[in-house]
Image (cartoon, rainbow, N blue to C red):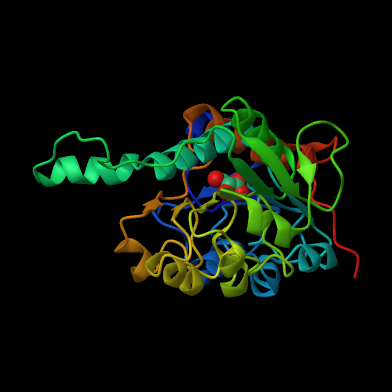
Length: 317
Ligand code: DGY
C-alpha cells in the first residue's frame, strides 16, 4: 500500500500508517504545487490531503485506479471534487466534530477583538504614539442585549450561539432547518443582515454560498454592525467588504479566512477597523492533533477494514 500525506503531520499521528507499506510525506514546509501533487500521487492507495490542496480530476487521474480514499484533514472540503472522487471509485472523508470548540472559541475571540478594538489598541500601544485614558478613548461596542446573527447553524454555529448567549447576546440564525430548541430565532437572511449587530458566518463554501455576503448583502447591514468570518473566505466578496469598511457601510470585520487565501485584499490590510487572523480556527494543539488522528483513522479504516469513520456524502447529481 502507498499513502501520500501532502503536508507534515505530527509524527505520532502517522504511526498507525507504518504497517500499511510506503508512507510518503511531503518534505516541503508549504503546500504542494499542483504539479508536485500530481507527481506525488501515482500508485497511491490513499491521499491524506490538507484544505489547501485542490484534489480534482487531474490529481485523481495521476493517482490511478487503485486510489481508495482521499482523507481531508479539515471539516471543510470545498477543496475536494467529491463527485469526481466518487466517480473514480474512491471515498472522500473529512474531520467533522473535532474542531467545533476550537473554532467557536476563536470566533468569540475575534468577535470580542473587533467590537472592543483589542488589536487596534495593541497596534497603537506598540507604535509608541502617545495616548491617555479619557471618557471617549477607543470606545468600542458592548455585546449585552445586542443581536448576533449566525449564518449556518451546524455544530460550530450552535457552539458559537451557546457561547454568545453567555455574554447576554440575543441570537437569530439563518439555516435550512429549524433547530427545534431555544437556541435562537430562525429568520430569513435579509432580516438577519438588516437587524443584527454582529453577523458571524458558519456555513460551508458551496456554489450557493460563494459571495453570499456581497455588496447588496453588506448594504443591508447596519452601519454600526460587524462581520465575523471563520468559515471560508469566498463566502464574502472581499472587494465589496473592503469598500463597505472603508466607506462606513459597516463598522468593522474580523476575518480568519480569505477569498484568495493566503493573500489578503490590500484594502483590508490597510484598515484599522479590521482584525485579520491567519486561518487559526482549529489551531489548538489538541484539536490539530485530533484532526490528524481522525484523517489517519479514516485511511486505516478504509485500507485495512471496518470502513472510513467520517465519509463525506456524495451530492446527488
Ligand atoms: C476546517 O477544518 O475546515 C478548518 O477550516 C480548519 O481550520
